[in-house]
Length: 447
Image 1 (tube, rainbow, N blue to C red):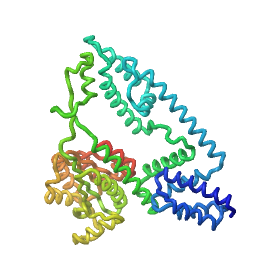
Image 2 (image 1 turned 30 degrees about the vertical axis):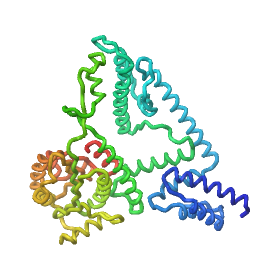
Image 3 (image 1 turned 45 degrees about the vertical axis):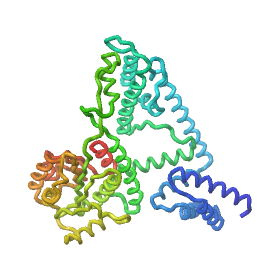
Image 4 (image 1 turned 180 degrees about the vertical axis):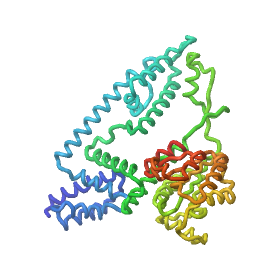
């Protein structure tokens, strides 16, 4: 291979390594050198062999293989395809700029520009016209004052901005829940944009797939996604506020809303404070044969959540209650951990499911876990022995805790086929939960 071709190869390898880094892979100069040496031996004729060598030399984590494959597909696509991606990105960037610019004349306070982000402006631009009008009316009334006719000067602008940001954040979350995220066009690089798009589609596909149908070779990637989702949820939990009668931090949004009738003069004030008492979560995972895979994935989610939110206690239950908190080791599967715990407790794997015994043990041995700061999560398909007794115990526990959430891995349309579901429904909020999408939505709303 001549020097010119080697130099060209090195240039492409460096560019490809930069793309991999942009999507989360760590690639060192020595690994690029290894890849170059490998390609000089096999040549560049066979695309599959080139991909194999690059994957072997540049990917260190099995969870990054899908990102590598999408990056390889996009980076080594045809020039025509790459040019089409570039045009698409340029068009999206132009549309984004036009959308942002169109909001500048609407979102003003006494003819002054408001200090809000471009994403918040894009949220406004994506609202139905009637909701846009409500925000414009609010800004107009805030600029002039209401009822009392007391003049309002520019010093009120920061408060108005805070209220507007809060409203736009509400809409951003609502639009995201409806699968209409308001996002900037992202990278101006067409190839990188294509990789990011493909990875988002992969993530959505995983989120909507029945966990029981995920093959073992995809587990590492799914667990990586679970950890990322749980960390994202944890960050939301730690930032939440609640209304407070006693003085804490001033709630600017509520304060300004209450005082519009006074022309913006702060006659009445609202306060907020951190939630009193840390949220405690108890997770009960059914480990019957039909439930094992669901329980493993859900436990991985809660384990990731526990790394940022303290007070999570985890139990498995079959014929009895099995404490799992603190027993997880890196690289150990949920099944291996449960089997190890069963050996220690003198129990055997298999057998029936008895939620009644599990709840009874929870009440007797761990009464301090049950309080009004406790969220009890039950993961089960509701197939259990002594169902009537279990329902009675759950009714008592429901009065002791903040809330009982039941994550049922059966689709809701099949609940009527399950004889015991009806007995549990009065004492819990039950959701169908057999995909990661279900799990994420449920916990983000309830925790």
